[in-house]
Image 1 (cartoon, rainbow, N blue to C red):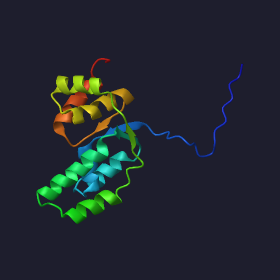
Image 2: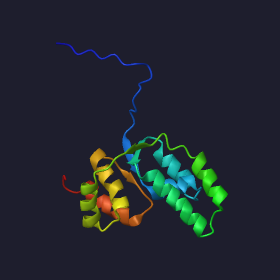
Image 3: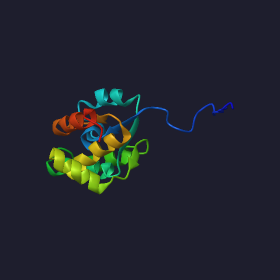
Length: 145
């Protein structure tokens, strides 16, 4: 028996490999941190994924920048409104599994959600958070879960 596959000229699916991005990584882009251009270059070959909580964490980072006097409220609002979250695939998490990872690596549940998703997708995790990066190195390169 022969299998035939006909594909459209421009596939409707994303054929790029997955990568998980955390809030620290995206905050640098949204708020124009110095490392933003280098970060954007690293993202090019990937389809980007994150837990559904990501936009809330980015907004919270904006609130912290406002409270610390780093940015005016209007600047935070403008940057959040201008950023297009639609290319990101925002996915639900499994709270019980995230709790286990948070406990194991002594992370917040928020950070553990990125770690969990990277494990589920068998994908690299992009972060500017050294502690999360260390946990990800152990978790993603360790024995099968």
